[in-house]
Amino acid sequence: MFSNIDLVSKSLKSAFYGRTIMVIGDLMLDRYLWGSVSRISPEAPVPVVRLKRETEQCGGAANVAFNLVNLGIQPIIAGVVGRDSEGRRLQGLLNSADIDIQGVITVDHIPTITKTRIIGGHQQMLRLDREVNYSLPQNHHQMLMDRILTILKTDTPAVILLSDYAKGVLTPTLCQEIIATARRMDIPVLVDPKGSAYHKYRGASVLSPNRSELATAVRRPDEELATQLMAGEILRENLELDYLVVTLSELGIALVDDAGIRRIPSVAREVFDVSGAGDTVISTLAAGLAAGLDRMDALVLANVAAGVVVGKLGTLPITRPELSRAVSNENALGESKKICNWEQVGTLVDGWRNQGDRIVFTNGCFDLLHAGHVSYLEAARMHGHRLVVGLNSDSSVKRLKGESRPIIQQQDRARVLSAIASVDAVVIFDQDTPLELIQRLRPDVLAKGADYSENEVVGGDVVKSWGGSIELIPLITGRSSSTIVEKINKNDAEESIDPVSS
Image 1: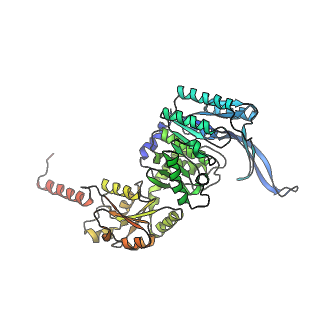
Image 2: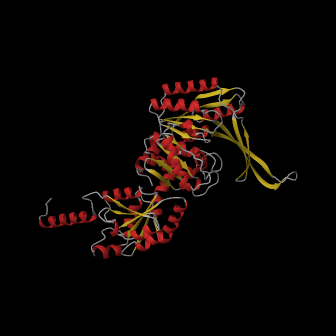
Image 3: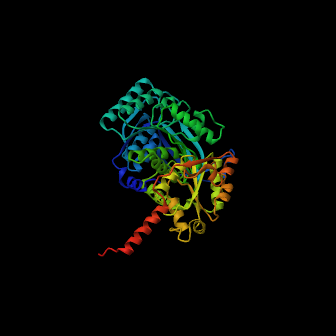
């Protein structure tokens, strides 16, 4: 699951603290009216909600900052509120959460964006939005930019996060000024975008649209996911981004970077409310990067966080204890969930293929797993989006290598393989060759070590028959299980001849 779980755990315990992230964007107040529904109104065919309580929370870019502070990050927020009671209450919520609001300016004649949701039981019945469409006037633009520049000079953040809800704050000019300044200061800029005019984000480090937003931006609204993500690769290059992160709701998250397209499946167990999930992903990703995690571990952490918040009702932030527990649970379960029987792996592969994933298959004994195996599996995974490993059973290994093998029994070999980040599924087969398993799974790519030739690869002809390909992976010389076994046997023999006295 994580390539460095120790560093992730350390980040959750202490590395987030003291890190500063600046959040710039559209500030909102989220108001909830909670009640129960037991009848339909006699006046109109609508449910009657009996009001029980009211709550208010940070919304929009303010919710991103609230997520960050709950993770232990010190956020500084910049944006605009109206000179009204909602604006005062929103600033009060931010202040009470110890969020630095020195970048917030108050303006006349523009109301604070307020979204009021009416909840009946566990069901959202209605949403009322109070807002006006506007473009930030030049005097307010300059005032906000001056505040941002002052903050950057006095308290340089580890990351800048642009949270765009297309409400008028993040104009093309403001975005480009911020990105150019951040580049000069070597500060990464993460963007949660809105709309289709993505040129204003050119030069940012990371863009994080959802699938619908990406489809609109690349003009592929009715295409398959795989096509949309490939168009996303072109978008990333055109906008000069380091990488693109696409949130896919129940399908998880996709990462588009120089290595291609990689998918992280959803971890949500039960979904009540997706509002605020995008904020959680971008804020947790930013926190992970600020704490020193690499992009993949930070993104996996963000995916786990999203799985927590969609199980809540309302725009509620992730908390560090919640995320720590979720990471522990996912880490404990993640590897064992990768170990499948034939029926389970078939279902998994069918699901991945339906999502547009390219399936890579390889097989082997993987006895006494070593660095050569890990490098081989990582290289194989680079040829697709999912890697399925067919593992020879104990009896199969004995028939191939003799009665003294395997050294490690099959369930332990499967468990160790499943802990490798590049492996998505492990399935044990008892036959002498994986041909029957290959025919069942119909992989797009069949990977094998470069010590084989194409015509020697079992199943190569059938994979080619449905349009698949064979990839021969270079091996690290001097690394093999047989060599390790020979060395152990040699050492044992030498010790029995010339034992060392203590």
